[in-house]
Image 1 (cartoon, rainbow, N blue to C red):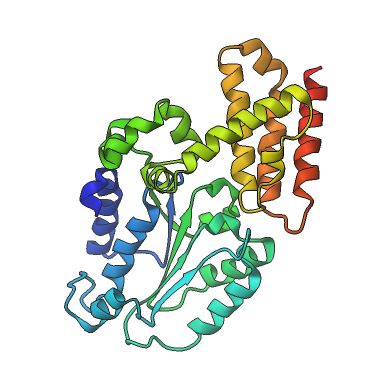
Image 2: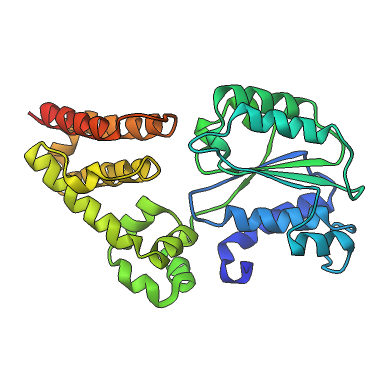
Length: 298
């Protein structure tokens, strides 16, 4: 699969060089924009680490267990809703107190690690400070600035770059032609893996409708029904659409953007805030945001 994603070749080679020279740390932070293939790279790394010969031979018992999806020494931690909660990290710590089932390495992949809540981050920090033999942690992160500096400082780092548009277009094939203004879509949604996902679900059309609804809402001052109907899961992306729509407006009107920078910043802060909230009145939040943007615009 990496052959279809040539921009992953360099970070993969960097990791292999560390492994071959015996310089692997117990924690690796794979950081890069959404949709650039961090998950794919992590799969390659964990397959090599779990292999009996640490070469991903494909023949040993560990490789066969991994291929079947039943390797007992592979642990994946995902956000529960909008957060990785402390219970998940405490459960991990309890699991790690026992020995490896296959007698080799154990590999923990923490997905969207920037979603650690405060208590979970502190619990993970203790694990990073006191690493257990044979345990490797892969931290997948699209926003490393949201991590505690004490966490990032205890990890080796591997940067997964945003590919060029030509590489993205080669990966997407004919589908790339439907995106038109590709810089907008790449900035909004991320790299080719994320773009592919949205194209397959035909959600690009949904984004286009959200853009139109935001324009109408900002003009009238009233939240459009389509925006009022979004789910809590969709909310951060819906606000991200607004964020880039304001930047899009300002692209041809620099003076407007300069005087409305507060509104752009407000939307950015609200996106981060929403990712930490549960059980809120989303319609009221979005309506209040429209009101504040219009008031600031005068």
